[in-house]
Amino acid sequence: MPRWPKPPEGSWTEHYSELGTDPMSYEDSISPEFYELERKAIFERAWLNVGRVEQLPKVGSYYTKEIDAARSSVIIVRDREKQVRAFHNVCRHRGNKLVWNEFPREETSGTCRQFTCKYHGWRYGLDGGLNFVQQEGEFFDLDKGAYGLAPVHCEVWSGFIFVNLAPEPSQTLREFLGPMVTDLEGYPFDRMTDRFTYRAEVGANWKLYMDAFQEFYHAPVLHASQSPDNYATAAQTAGFEAPHYQLQGPHRLVSTSGVVTWELDPSMRKPMEDITRSGLFGPWQQPELGEMPSGLNPAKCDPWGLDSFQLFPNFTILIWSAGWYLTYHYWPTAYNRHIFEGNLYFVPAKTPRERVALEMAAVTFKEYALQDSNTLEATQISLESRAVRRFPLNDQEILLRHLHKVAGEWVGEYRSEAVR
Image (tube, rainbow, N blue to C red; front, side):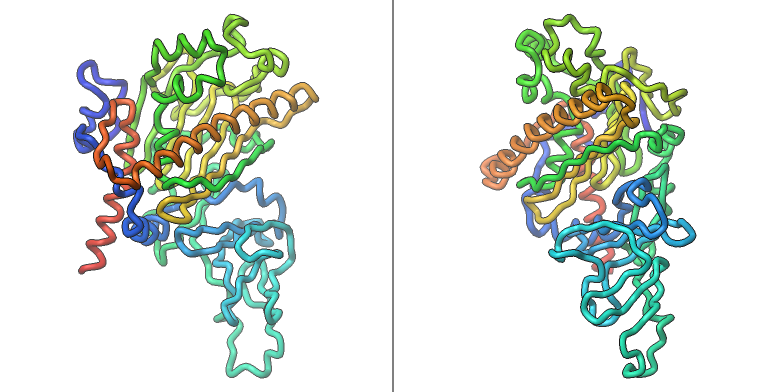
């Protein structure tokens, strides 16, 4: 159960006694054997976010998602009844990949009336049904009704599209998310349709990159170059501590107070922030969004900065007080590599100045993310030496302990089932 606000005595970590306070091993981030178990135990069983409904604006809109950790490719499509569906991207004839462009390992998107296999021309409707077989009469008692596309469990919450690759999920999406996440219902995600997206291959385990955004202890040091010298020095001297951490099921939350950039002394701001009226914390001109849902700012910070919701296994929703949000995805491709995706969402700009402000926020975010990813490749290299095997974590790193504990529990449960 969540415990907040912070207890008057002791630390956050101590009050979640199941986590322990001992130095932690990162063997789960450097072991090829553990990664193989994660693929089966986590990525073939958990609900995975694969995008938003705005990516499917009309009937026939589709896109593909490569889920390398599950050795799967998925088609997400809006059918003729405007329902969002998902299918395995596999032709039922000879197993060719059904939807792809020039390069079969790359993702693609578009609009169509039906899906046609490039190999032998089999055609499938938007509902996945098999509509046409080339030279059908040469097949033996072929029942087209039995050879539609293989469906993938697909549910939508607040416009976010999730899939589950298990034959039968153990929980509905809503049960899996739990109230800490579903209490965000009512936030105007659907109004924030201007999207800036980044994608990069990172030479580090997926959990290590998640860890980088699960604590702000590093920010005054790693990101010092992004602030004027006097502000960076003051921040490093003071340090940083978020006022609220929360754990619920496999998911995590860190909520923190914030700085209103435009109220800072001008000497504490960068010239480009004044010119564009924007920066890391978003555009200075905030949209009117109405009443916020109960799940935001649980610690009642004033001023409030942001809430970062870490959804297991590999998805983050980070909501800024300035009226925008971003998402992170971490898609494993090996025990020591993954694809990082960042998406920033804003209420659409109405003027050139507003557009410039959005782009300034997007560019600033990119610089911060690059600093984190470069550091984590260095972390991966050093961890794999195994010269040091256990590492002390402070109280602000409680979410790191929780992520690695939950991953270990899912793998442990999978192992237990395998020996029954």
